[in-house]
Every structure is written in structure tokens, then in C-alpha cells.
Image 1: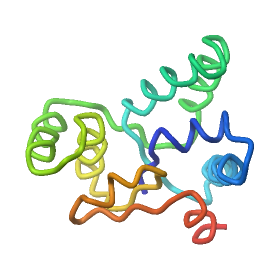
Image 2 (image 1 turned 90 degrees about the vertical axis):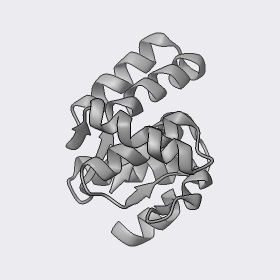
Image 3 (image 1 turned 180 degrees about the vertical axis):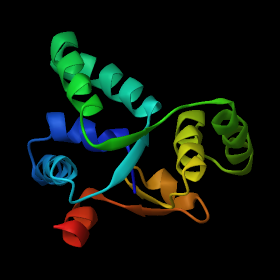
Length: 138
């Protein structure tokens, strides 16, 4: 399963049920009850948003913690970008989301946990939201 940046962002900033569910997902990953992957683009997106939401120091602390989690980190290499161009051309996704899809395909994943319903439009990709992930893996 691929984990989108918004799960980390809501885990850090969400006060309601969504934030709680995202924190549960992080806990399940750390307990190795969920196996997941993410591209290094996730780090960029998380630190960028969290810098604005919680400040630079907290954003750095959170993203450093992410790097120590048992996540398979996918490098964004030329093959990912070439595949991204194809995905971007054939869908209405923005380039960053196309990189996430390309990264997933690079390592053979077809399920993404995300609150972004734009991923629902991609053929061959199953998106589950945070609450569905908790139901499935808790």
C-alpha cells in the first residue's frame, strides 16, 4: 500500500476523527501491522504544508521521524518521471499526483491510502481513505 502525504499532514494537524484515524495509521505502520511505501515526494509535500501549519522546527521534526518509520521509500528516478509524463498526459491528475501514481507502479502497488479523491479517476488504482484503512487493518 502507498501512503499519501495528506495522511501525515492530517495526523499532525487534525483534531477531529480524520486526524485521529491518520494517527492510528501512523501507529499501525510503526508497529509494522501495515506495510507501506511512499516516494520521497511525500517528504517534500509534508514539510512544505507543515511549515505553514505548525512551523518550520516542528515540520522538520515530523519529517525526520517519518524517515525513521518502517516505510519503503521510493526514489524519484528517471523511470518514475517518464512514467509520470504518460500518466499526466492520460489523466486529469496534477503532475505531483502523477508522480505518486508512477512511484506506486514502479514498485508494483495498486492501493493508495489518501483523502484525495482525484486518485479515484486512475484506472487500476484503488484509493482507500483513512477510515477505510483503519477498518481494514485495525
